[in-house]
Amino acid sequence: MPGAGAPRGQGQSPAGMGPLGRPWVLLLTYTLTALELTCLFMQFSIIPYLSRILGLDSVTFGYLQTTFGVLQLLGGPVFGSPALPGVALLFASRLPAALMHTMPTAQMVITDLSTPEERPAALSRLGLCFGLGTILGSLLGGTLSAACGIHCPAIIAFVANLLGAALSFTCIPASTKAASARGQAAPPGGPKASLFDLKAIIHLLLRPGVLPVFLIKVISGFPSGLFMVMFSIICMDFFGLEPAQSGYLLSFFGLLLMITQGLVIGQLNKHFSEGALLRASVLVFCVVGLAMARMSSILHFCLLMPGLIFSLCALNVVTDSILTKAVSPSDTGTMLGLCASVQPLTRTLGPTLGGLLYRSFGVPVFGHVQFAINFLVLLALWRQPLPQKKSRVQ
Image (cartoon, rainbow, N blue to C red):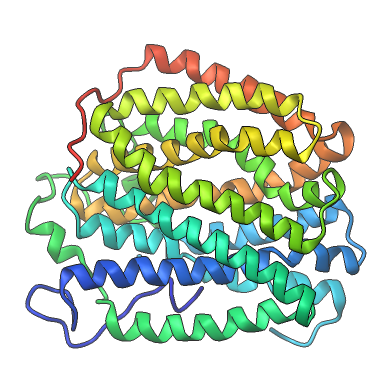
């Protein structure tokens, strides 16, 4: 949300941590992230059903999701409703998405306040926040819409985000770069990248080991992102679920996500290199794609969900960790901004493309696309040298 995604603070302490110390800033960052994601998923749980009430088909719903993605994609570089009738108001409600960047902001704060050795575990703990937000938001969204009307979750989310904005502006420092700059300086002669400086971005991406990993992050995660942006429509049309039932399913998704990213990925990082985990995530994507192509019921989806979540978590945590360690501390915000633009890019291209594919070929097409793309990525990965040193996670 706008407030929670743009931390400010006054009265900085000598260490640059504002009125709170480093542990409390980290804890508050995790808490605000969980709060914002809870509100976000409360809204996500009702948007598909509200769009159906207003007469939108799957392709037009894709346009709505594309609008959300475009606004986040345009607003991403900046981060570090009027009285309209019916469908127009629904589209206008997506306008604040240009300022909704809580997750990349939290990633930047956590990256600044953690050492390179701590970073994979610190970033993976955001999975606990994401899972908690998915569980609570989906449950509350489905339950409140059934008990109090379809607009109730949006009103509750608005009030909760006002609270999050107040805490963000008063308790989190405007900059945490001083903490990371103490431990590592930018390489001499290298330009500081800015998201508005194309030349600096190209220089950043061309640093050793950066561009291949960034392309893997974009290409490998796109098919699953394509499926997830259409998931709410699939729940209604393919699985035949009501809002409350969709909320329960998303809560199960959030529980698995919280366990996998918050606990499993951190443990695996202790025993395997980042390169091995990255290859494993792509391989599991392939297997899940084949299973998804044969999926015919909600039970089948629940059985393949753990593999899908493992791949999503491993891909995001490992690539974010590799990319932020490959650049100087002064450029971690820019790199995280580029990484954060991947999901809005998927939400920009995915909904319209997904809507057309779903209407033309049905659900199995998402499995076929996921297998084909990740199989090609897996072949490329075996030829691409990746970090082999094990991460010592504390």
